[in-house]
Length: 302
Image (cartoon, rainbow, N blue to C red; front, side):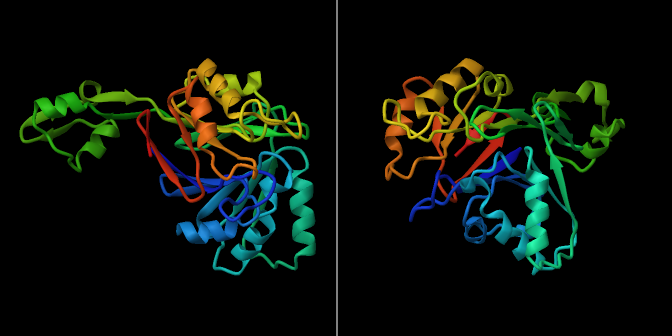
């Protein structure tokens, strides 16, 4: 299970209703920030999330609406009691940007900052999840990211119901491979544990529809895809997607759910983008600043 909280859902520039792109993914006590548009500190404060809880930042690319919030965020962290390492991931030029930022800011950081530049297909391996970078088509070097929980073993709920069992502290021992006994019932791991597939999320970053995103989003629990424009309306450039583009990609990838984000400031009302996408992919939702979604066992809880 993990949670996504959108901090900014707009593109290009902040508006009164929308800050620029960023969201936090919370998983087992860890907070991971994807992109950090202008005003991210304000939204973190409004959401009740502490900047010092953020362990990793993933930058999709170096257009201002995706990274202008990083300087203020890092320097805010430096004024707190943070001592744990912050790791910043991103495409080519990430190291150069962070090094220049820290060299001119008189920051006197009390915590280490590690920078790791990623290429297409490179993966970060953690105990309970992986994050894989993939190249997208936007113009400058740009990445999307696939977050995937590792599969786990859980108690067979059907057997629990059959034997009228309720959650028990001994279940932890069972999950660790030990045989246990509850009220005379002997329980072996091989008889009581079932594989539970982990949930997954793909963040497209900024891109036109492309094969790499489709491949990464194959059967994903939730696809967060940029939806800068409404289908048929004039686009200032060719590096972005419409809501219909996102829906077609989600359908092709057989994703379970689609969340639209990165809306052009021209749209005061984003419902038309949702309606357009739903004609192709019914399980489509709109992101909104400070709105959260819970992803649990293949389901998206709004």
